[in-house]
Image (cartoon, rainbow, N blue to C red; front, side, top):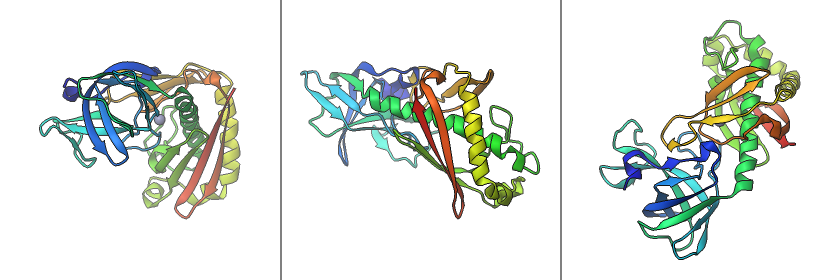
Length: 286
Ligand SMILES: [Zn+2]
C-alpha cells in the first residue's frame, strides 16, 4: 500500500484531468463508498480550509463499467492503525497521511484493481476561474484597505501592503459562478491599527476601487502556475502569476486557470455585516 506511506500522489496542481491508478483502499462512506487510489488527478475539498469544492467525474473499473465520482474529499490515513483518522487528528503525527477519497454510490472496485480516473473538466474549469478571481480580488481588497491602517501591522501580502484578507477572513466558498468571502473586523484587528469604522463607512467606494484595480490587473495577462505540479496531497503548494509586471505568489491548495488571459472581467460587491463585511466575487471568462 504505497500511497499510505506518503499519502495520495496528486496531479491537479499541474492541470491534470485523467490518470490510471491502483485502488489501495475501499471504505463505506455516508453517501456511498470512498475509494483511495495510489495517485489521482482529482482535487479534493480540503479538511482544513473548505473554500474549493472537490472535483467530480468518473471512474472506469477493470470490467469497463464507468461509475460517477459524485464528490472527492481529503481524508487522513493512519498507517499505524490502518484506518481513516478523523479530522481532529494532528497532521504532524508521522503516522498520518493525506489521501483523496473518491466517493461513488455504485458497487465499488476491489483493492488492487486498476481504474481509470476522469475529472469533469467543465466543473473543474468553472471552479478554477472563480478561484483565480478570488485571489486577485483578495489582493485588490488589501490595496483598497491600505489607507485605513493607522500603523503597520507587519503582515504584508505578496504585493507589499498589509494583508487584511488573511488577517480578517473567516470563511470562503467558491462555486462555479462566484465566490463569497466572509470577513470579521474584530478587536484584535483594531489593536493592530485597522480603522474599522472609517473602512466600513467607505465600503461602497472601496468596492468601486477594487473593481478598478482588478481591471488594471487583467490588462497585462500573465501565466498562472500552481506548484509543485504533482506530489503527495499533504505537501504545501503555491500559486503564482505576474500582476502589472510584478511577481505575485501566495500559498494555495486549489486549482486555477493557466493564464489570466482566460478571464475577461472580475467584479466584486461588498456588503456590511454585524461582524464586518462580505465580499462576493464574480469572474467571467473571455
Ligand atoms: Zn487559493
